[in-house]
Length: 126
Image 1 (cartoon, rainbow, N blue to C red):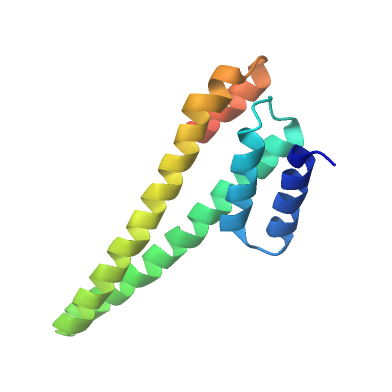
Image 2: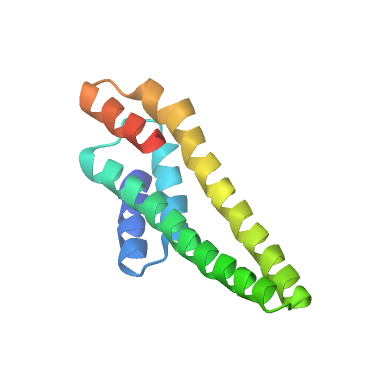
């Protein structure tokens, strides 16, 4: 079994287990193999990052709402804690987004030979 196949398989397992951070790591390893991704691998890559970002966006909304409630009720300490946590989530979001943009810009778009994969990657980047 090739390492590429193994990592793609592990990414599929991670997706079923809803472990999207691990899924992104497995797909990074597939991308780093250096050959063009097939349709299924492109979809796995997209799903991995979409879901990893989606979880954090949801977390950000909850924490931002709690921060607003704490501010409205005059709970300065609670608002500060919520703000700190929101900042942490924002940092994670930024890190994930920068990682996928780096993969797209440095590896995937330049290596894509056909129009369909390039359009797929460019749509991911916007």
